[in-house]
Image (cartoon, rainbow, N blue to C red):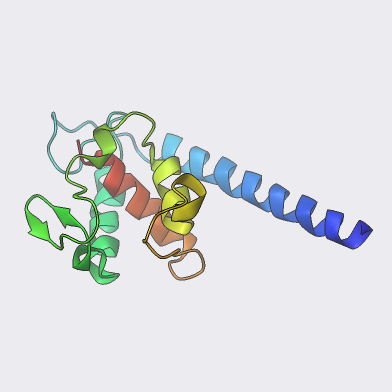
Length: 133
C-alpha cells in the first residue's frame, strides 16, 4: 500500500507542477493585445503566436474531423466557434478536457488525448480554443 500512495502522491505532484507551469507560461506569454473577438484575441490579451500555433495543432491533429470552427469542420462533436466564451472554459480547463474529456463529462464520446499530443502543443491548443469567443 505505501507504494500505491507514493505513486498517487507523485502523480498529483506532477499534475500540480504541470498546471503551475502552464499558468506561468500563460502569464508570461507576451500578453500582446489584439482587438475584440478576432482570432488570436483572448480575454487576457493572449499571445497571438501561441494562439496561431494552437490553430496549427488543431488542424494537424484532425480536430476538425469532429469539431467545426467558424462553419468549417465536422459535426460529430460540438461546434467550438465560441468555446472560449463559455464560463469556466479557461485555457487550463480546455487542456484538461482534451487530455481526459470524461473527467469533465462522463458521457463524452471524445477520446482522451493525454500522451497523444505533447504538453507544448496542448498549451498552444488550449490558448487557441480559449481565444474563440
